View (spheres, rainbow, N blue to C red):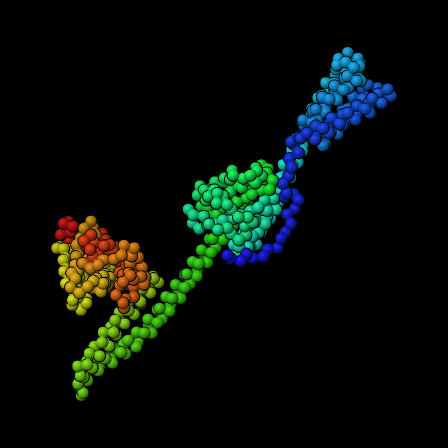
Length: 522
């Protein structure tokens, strides 16, 4: 389990704690309203002989106005109604009767109700606006703190540790984090920054949220407060993980929206971290490729000098007539010559690969005869087909094809050498050249064991060698074939024949073929 970096703890401001919505009234507020009206009624009972009946109504109204500062709309209207009934029954004539005998008393009660109702509405609206502003402030500050912590993290473990700390303080909940192993698979283990362990049922719910990209709630919690909430960390239609939240108290609606905003910010931060890592890997890979190409190019040129020296020395050794070489000595010299030629071909392939990858190879397109191309390639590889049967078939009436003769010849020779090396002695190899669908098609097929199915897609990769391939190869030959042909606007393919053996095919476009009188037959 990776070690989680230590993080400085910063206390969450009180404004980020869950805010109680005062717009909802409970029984205590109704009780407070009733007791307040009762106390004011007792006071008015003793004051009414001195201040008059109408003044007592104003005292009731003042009490209702003061109540609006502490209770909701319902208790305020309850206090207004109770005050009007008490005022009418105990103070307005006729006393001890719910009847209004004067018009001015009726107007007084109506005004009382109207003022109380308007004040209740205004106070409730003001309180709701104040609560909304506090919630907006809490959300803004929470997002600011989260963004600051995410931006200051130097690695993913520190980032998630700070994330969990912020979410615990903001939502008063336990937090668990699971990162995605792939777009379809969620990691089976919690990140070390998690504060609680998911059960098996919760893990399956988290996996569902990851696959479908939507939040869900675990309904198996023992209480509503303990139900876990799972939010996918999605960005650009891709989920990078899941956050599990087990609140200690029910989440308010504004907290639920804030939680969604947290999830988006965390997902973006994780995605930026992933892109930064991939960019760094790509940069290191490119630098590694550049250094390897430079080293390969330098070494190849340096090796060419001793190869030439060895070649000249062996030729001079064979030309010495003063002391004729014995049979065993001649065999040793022949082995040296053969090894030197093999090393020379290897260095030549390395140089060709370096030139192709650096973009310094420009095809020299000239009118070429396909028959000459095939005959030269067969002649240059005749030593390798001493123990094989090579059948050559060339279509008739070929036009002169615009191509780089040397590059195409090298590609064809590499395919022929590859067939000779990877097939047993006595195996048939077929070379076929034909024109079809406005393309020059060169096919090299053999009756050997063929290629493993999982290797077909990789045979043209640099340094790739099929399993159980003969020793001594470098894995550069087929890469050169691909490079030489694609440099001329063609393509090359590899496949296993239905009856066994491998088939390699070169396709070159004939759009640039020089027209002749027989081209209409293609």
